[in-house]
Length: 233
Image 1 (cartoon, one colour):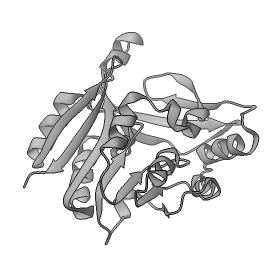
Image 2 (image 1 turned 45 degrees about the vertical axis):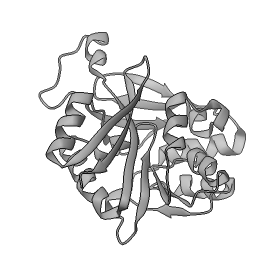
Image 3 (image 1 turned 90 degrees about the vertical axis):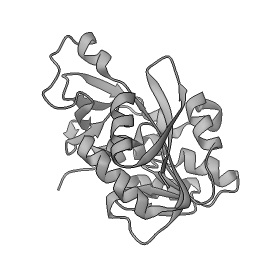
Image 4 (image 1 turned 135 degrees about the horizontal axis):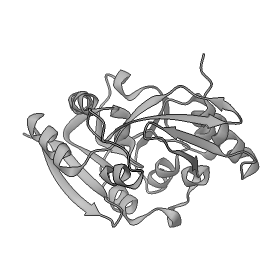
């Protein structure tokens, strides 16, 4: 049984307002970085422009996928949306409940069935949970089963090709945006997980093959971009 070290760090920050020990993130490209846990607890004045645009485009019944501790769900809830926060971490779900999120689902996105939403929202590169490009195809197919007639996907991703130049490492045989991560907190490591970053060309190619319409809505100066997608009618 692997520990939810991500959830433990979120809980300690929620309880104490700070961490005495850093939450570390090990990556397959050889880096170990400190994860700024406070970013999960941002108030709306701290949301970047990209996230504000995404939140302003939410429509109807919203599923906030990978909701963390509920910052985006709380914002939408305050605006009067019917929003459901989906999160796999039991600890994160408990924190959301304490923070006032009304509708919480503790589940895996790919296991979700018999529900319909007008907006599937994946912020903070939440689309990364697809793990790899085949997983992204599966995500698009599964999303169609969860979307209403007027349904949309809203998510951000980024082109991480610069990492291979920055760290002077050889590009992998598989798609370069497929990364493996592992959290570490207080000397305990969580289960490794795969995460996906999509460059725009790969995104558009897959979307066309899977019969989705793509709109690139916003790009910042860090190669991060916001996307709106809907199934082609």
